[in-house]
Length: 393
Image (cartoon, rainbow, N blue to C red; front, side, top):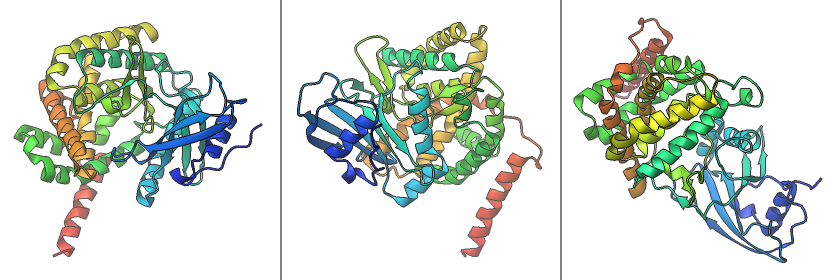
């Protein structure tokens, strides 16, 4: 068995020798020696929680299986980012997807050529197939109608394959995106970022949407519980154009960045995409047709039929859930540079418009007793904010 290379601390450790050993350890035995390598940092300025390197390889001999280039993904060298990734198990989730799910899933993702993960530090490395020959999606431009339908079909095949069949290994060990404990944490993060969102992007909220966003803050966990009562499947979790690649064929489609993958509601992936990466006009034009195709594909693959009405109802619930990502991005991330600000603004505008178009505010859970856990979390958060304000005077 080939000796695995050491887990690199940064991109500077990625040398020709390291790549050669990684590819060999990953199962590509008998490759000629790497003669030369050039490295491009393709993640710079993209807001990634780590390093993303394209390594172009020159080989010392002819071999049709030798890749012309590979992608190497590493954690951020920033201690704060690394702590957050560990707290949310982002590196672990992506590593487990590529190891256990990706090779068998009916949706294309980059082939894992080599991977390593340290459970103690949560540092990792992925050496992946380079999809640079395909057309990359552009979140600012938004998906065309054809691209959007193609993406929804691919998501339907992924979701239908695992629909309500996630209780056995290796799927049963994947991250549960709708667990009650996680939902309460998400509610706290939402509440913490709502006021900064209003400060930075308040002009995008109508009075009605502002009231809805405020009311949602005490009901995030309850809303997650309602969605969790429905069907479960494997989800990507960050379905947006910047994570998509399109080839020439109708089914030639791939997705990258699986760090927030896990077990959850398939319609959340669809709502996340159509509500944030598709222009308002295109979404309005294709939305129902896209959901009918999704419902038909999942129904044919899963046990029993799934009615369009049930899919549509859950989709509307998940459109309301898009408030979460909009508030996290607009209130919690640094969106000071041009493109990140544009993505934040477009995502928020598209989300709020979709919520209004679909009357998704009607999916807001009924107000619970003041003594419910979700209300208690909100009350403690407001109390802590008031205390900090008082002592800062």
